[in-house]
Length: 507
Image 1 (cartoon, rainbow, N blue to C red):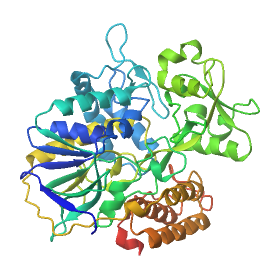
Image 2: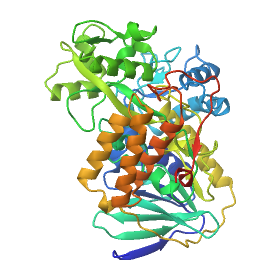
Image 3: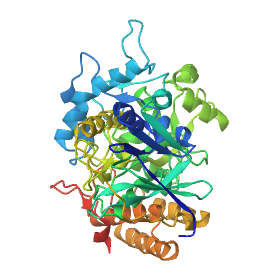
Image 4: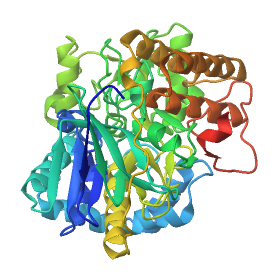
């Protein structure tokens, strides 16, 4: 190893949290008074996907709603692969977590009587999405979390570092992480408990609403040390990214369609009813494929908000309004061009209901985890709820468990620095073209060969490992289900099964 390596041993029983999005910070706060060290780059508050969530946080918060109804909608959206026990946990514990966020100071929108204002989003049977200032829920919630974490005595920020590999002990367990600073310095951090909270995989694709740094790094570094992956093929494409050539693409929240905005094409025709009986409020994967089909047919899709939102656009949806106006589109009077973009990864590190992976000492929470709550297609606005419900559950479990000391036996750097810009760009384009909204065996096999050729050049870089697993899982699933659509296997099998993969099964 050419770069100097320093080591740091965390106090006995301390927790290393990798990532500073909502799941990681909420868990860190709930671990008090246990010492917590949060590893994050300086861009974390800007680059955390939690901060970009526009719709809000879903929970059964009104007298007309119920946890059972929320769970049923979650299960229906997941297209056969949602674990009903996990959906029950999410829906039953959700309202208390939302009220906890409100008590922390999150300024949820309320009506004149002080009740939470709840919005309707796609595939929900009733309005249950709590919002903040229209479309700024993610940013407002993450700002509160950052403020609370910075003020918490038990939390130490390891800022300016990015995890690149996991440290292993001699007993199949995880003993911390190796991190790299922007200047190239390496730091081996030994910890008895390591929690991955690094977000999703959108940065592996050419068009995404995620931060470009969301490249599945946690999945890659965990896979090569034996972590089990679940449902990696299920990537959710948000149907309405604003198509103005930005990277990452700004998002036109689903709440716009919930408020009555409609999809039209360049011929001026509303097209969703041709593809799905629920029209604009169909599940995301159906809407994304419909929009993609219109693009393939040469008919540019647009979101028409002129009648449904109109003059109130800048007040009700300030984030979308700002994005549109920056491209000289006034959504009060003009159509918004849209296209599908990678938005959320349902798959990830396989965990139980408290975030424990198959490796001793390694937990995962938030988007990089796979509890079985999202199945084949996440229900709108369940992601922020998942972060606090399962982040809180992981914290409670860690605080009550007997923690064995971990000693690192292996410290291994990995070849990020060889992932030159042209290699990253080629990977992103190939993933979008061959593992995107529509897939088939020929494309996926060609993609796997291409990724293998990059690994031969670069080495086992985290983004390449994660991409390889996603493509392999997509090839193995010979059916269409949820966010995964195969041109060569368009039907859904009668038996619904989650997929589980480890890295050594690929070779």
